Amino acid sequence: MPKWGMVIDLDKCTGCQACVVACKTENNIPFSTPEQAEMGRTISWIEIIPIMEGEYPRPKLRYLPRPCLQCDHPPCIKVCPVYATYRNPEGLVGQVYSRCIGCRYCTAACPYTAKYFNWSAPTWAKEFEPCLNPDVSKRPKGVVEKCTFCHHRLQKAKEKVKAEGRELKDEDYVPACVQTCPAGAMYFGDLDNPNSKVTQQTKSPRAFRLLEELGTEPKVIYLTEGEWHGAYRK
Amino acid sequence: MQANKFRIIGLVLVAGLLAFTWLRIGLSKSTEIRQPIRFNHKKHVQGGLECSGCHQTVKDQATAGRPETSLCMTCHEASVTKNPEENLIREYAQRHEEIPWQRVIKLPDHVFFSHRRHVSTEKLDCTSCHEAIGQSSEPPSRPIKFSMDSCLACHQKMKASVDCVACHK
Image (cartoon, rainbow over all chains, first blue to last red; front, top):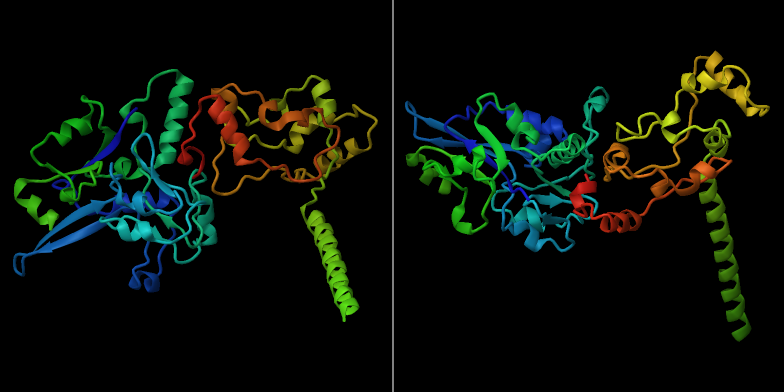
């Protein structure tokens, strides 16, 4: 069974937010209002975290795109009292909205702040309604949601390859953010396949995992030049 | 004193029973489904039509689809039965209106079900889930409900995925 993983090359990322927009459109994530944003209630399954360094006249700005890291040992699933979040056989951390009771334990437990609580029922402008993705639900008020690595795309890919009578390949299943990235900074594939591009990338001396010392074993691996590694670990 | 107590209990019971009956009648009326035409599945199946003859998207889309008036008219343009209901089809067609078929099965928003996946890919027969609808001469008057247990029982039997996110979106 494949183990899906993502590699993000931080040296290529320009912080353009195309992945954020693609994700929001693909996964029916409602627009935030300035009031909600001020209260920290904006939902963004993938977030570009800016890291500022240095001072004028030589400031440095780096960007860290952060989806759900789909940990192999996810702290969020250990605290869920109702099995609404769990690790599935392919290593993806699932979120079942109809089971979620909104206790937000998982939101607090996630060291990467990748989980979001729906403080209000989602609304869209009437003109936007036809653009919603029918393969993804509109999450109701009071449940926690997060990036699923566009799991619905995996379902479709599996159906397609079965109809064509062949095995699933890496290029059959790509999340919306990876597909959109104009800088080509994101890679996606099977981490269990030694020949896949993502597995090759993880062997790079530039590769590191976010907050590795926590033992969460995330399946999103970042690439950056050596001198920057330490900064991301803070 | 004791008699009074029994009288009060009796009154409460009668009131409760009345409220229950009233609620049931109200609920059953609100869930009742009245189709614009009393469609006879049995007659169509006996006439040699396949399910996909009318539910045309069943093999290649998530939803099976309900027939458009123009599709009904391919057979019913001229009278093929003595049933007065048949005239209704032509009336809708003359007014260039679609027949407002009512949904009898409505999946919850958090469930994803694909007919294509079940019918085309897995080669399941329609009766596996829809049982005797093809043999009914009246359209169902109540919504048809599916339980997760029946889905899971089949998924376990057929060794299909029982992962939550395989069906829950």
